[in-house]
Image (cartoon, rainbow, N blue to C red; front, side, top):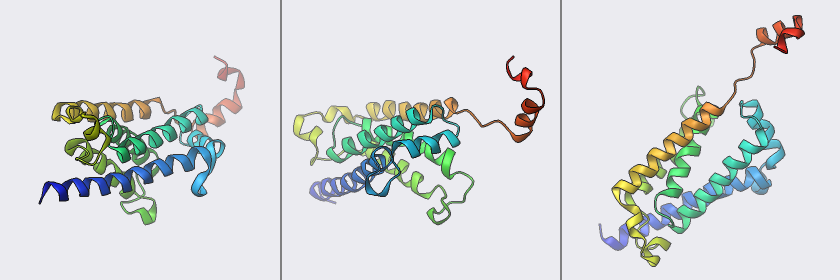
Length: 185
């Protein structure tokens, strides 16, 4: 494959995946493109165990917007792809896990696809048709920088999952209702 063909292919992948990810984040936070907006998304995040829900929803939404725009522009090395990986790890585990593989059953297909593209773009770089190439920032796409960014993305995703608080079980709620004074201890 020619360098021109490879660079053009990377440009197409960056534009498609980057803009879709940015739009997905904008739908969550602003309610654009048929999304629910921050209040409803925050409520959903609360149901998933992320409290305060609005804060977690805002951070996830902005991470998707920033990652998508960085990927689209091919700017700042593997930072955008690593952010995409981080968000998709959290989405796969909290929303899609246990629902099968395919998107038709809300399975992990879509977050896995986006996470894989994030890893691939971090490892390959954005190509010649990118802001990094125009600004002479190709060194940001070294294998070492990509590895560090991807490890950071995984750690960020795991850290976010660890910050999640599971809702109390029904039996736990019944115990608190039976002895409310014990809930204050």
